Figure 1: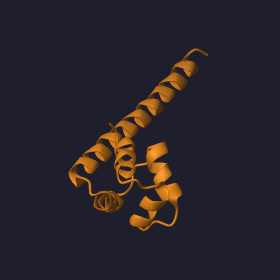
Figure 2 (figure 1 turned 135 degrees about the vertical axis):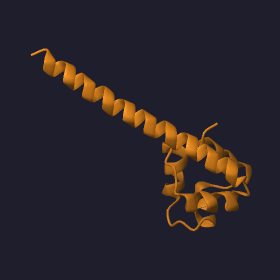
Figure 3 (figure 1 turned 180 degrees about the horizontal axis):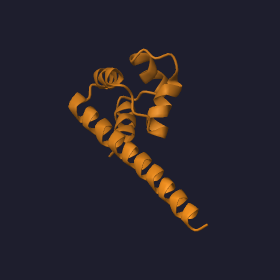
Figure 4 (figure 1 turned 120 degrees about the vertical axis):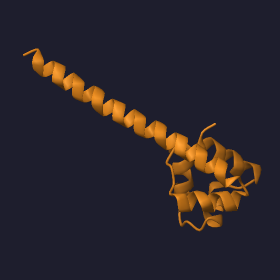
Length: 95
């Protein structure tokens, strides 16, 4: 389970809408919760703390999931950039 899935599961277990969770953590837009749940955005450590409190969740678990997901996102991004760079290098050598 990733961070987004865990947040969604915890929110639903409380019977809350994204609007309810946004209100509980004092953010103006429920769209922010959708960014987390649907697009995999990793919130700041302060926001993870607020989510843990509001959802009565294990903060350590949420931080570990967020860290794992962020690491995967960064690794994917780095690999993509290096692969693109190498492809450009190889293309330039074929000329």
